[in-house]
Image (spheres, rainbow, N blue to C red):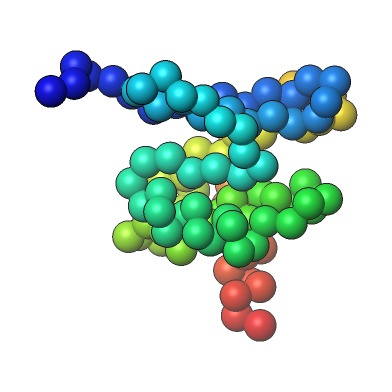
Length: 115
């Protein structure tokens, strides 16, 4: 039996661009272009694998993240149950979206899904 452990992922921006690394309880680490962890992660990773494309714009990445959530969780994403945080490569600053910003992005993906 193993002692308790946790899996983590780290996102950073450095001179080489955006970096995503994961660690597992066994100590193994890996790098990814897009990643999901937690409940629904298998569905989310498959969605990311099919829909992530190199060179996506900021808005495309945000929409990809929210659509991934929409496809992989049991409830619809709302401004109340989504926390959206990003770091842009240009300024390397952490930004947590307000509920209003989250709602604006969610409205974008809802409008697109109607067409």
